[in-house]
Amino acid sequence: MAYRQIRVCNLYPTQEDSFLLVIEEIKSHQKFGIFTLKNEAMHILSFMYEKYPPRPSLYEVFSNLLKETNVQIMEIRITQYKQSVYHAELFCKDANNTEKRIDIKATDAIALAYLNKKPLYADEQVIQDCSLLYAPMIEKMEKKLSGDGQSSKANQNIFSISKVDLYERQLEHAIECENYELAAEIKKKLDQAKKSKA
Image 1 (cartoon, helix red, strand yellow):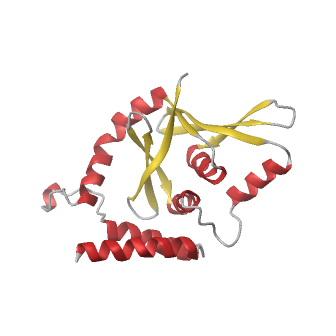
Image 2 (cartoon, rainbow, N blue to C red):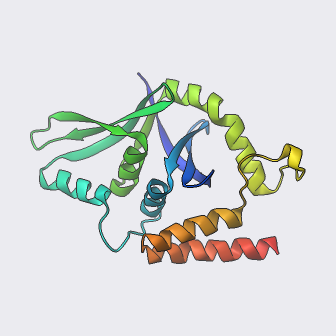
């Protein structure tokens, strides 16, 4: 298997408590999506911006536990996409330099990658297959946010979103999680989005 480095390049609310993480392969800019719950999405966002909640999350507890047992995360890989489910692994080394692989949910793997500042990779085949699968959906969302989408109801995307809507949902959840530093960052973006809309 060949792996390519990836990153989270966007986050879109879809419906109710669901978000779509847009993942981009760094060199080719191919994109694919991973659906996640609001709470997971907000943790990933807070780790990306390095704005941590006042009390440690399970991600932080797990990371600290690994460190205390002399297990170091080396890198994180999304290994396959099977039956509409992503599979991921943590690649770790213990104190004896023995490699360990830990099976993990893809969204948790992404959160841990950003928390621990570790590289994130995906299998080439996953990138190829999933970029084809998610490309139309991501394109519609990007058009909707940029204002290029058609305004008629017949052509409207099922994802009824705007920058203001995106930041309002993120702000609401950051406050619920008592992550006030992140909330302040999102509030600035929300105010700017509202001004540019006016």
